[in-house]
Figure 1 (cartoon, rainbow, N blue to C red):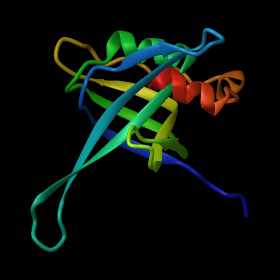
Figure 2 (cartoon, one colour; figure 1 turned 30 degrees about the horizontal axis):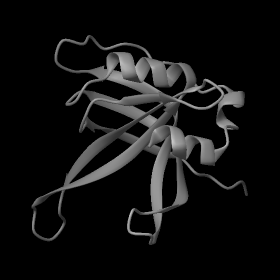
Figure 3 (cartoon, rainbow, N blue to C red; figure 1 turned 180 degrees about the vertical axis):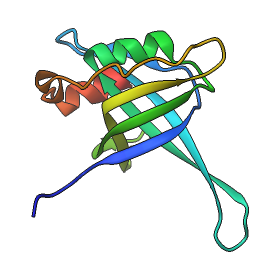
Length: 135
């Protein structure tokens, strides 16, 4: 059987996307998406925050069209990376790297089609370079 690493989210942006470039000039955008659900036992709404990373043309489209509060569909894969916190402790971060993103809508933005899948060359960018670019 083939291994699968697939994440699908529909949620709202917590802040405007931040776009940077890698040393090689590839655009990378990061943003957070909130998803909410009712708790099973107490019925209280629980919100989960997800860090999203987009590359290349998708990063540029996300930075141009997405704004805080907009509803977005994100499809991608979960990745983890280790980093050192300011206090020197080792930390582990989990991110969803975008394969497909659709802008569902939001204040002043009309729904649009997907920005398209990430190209194969974009997926091969060095993760250390991505870490530096995404801050």
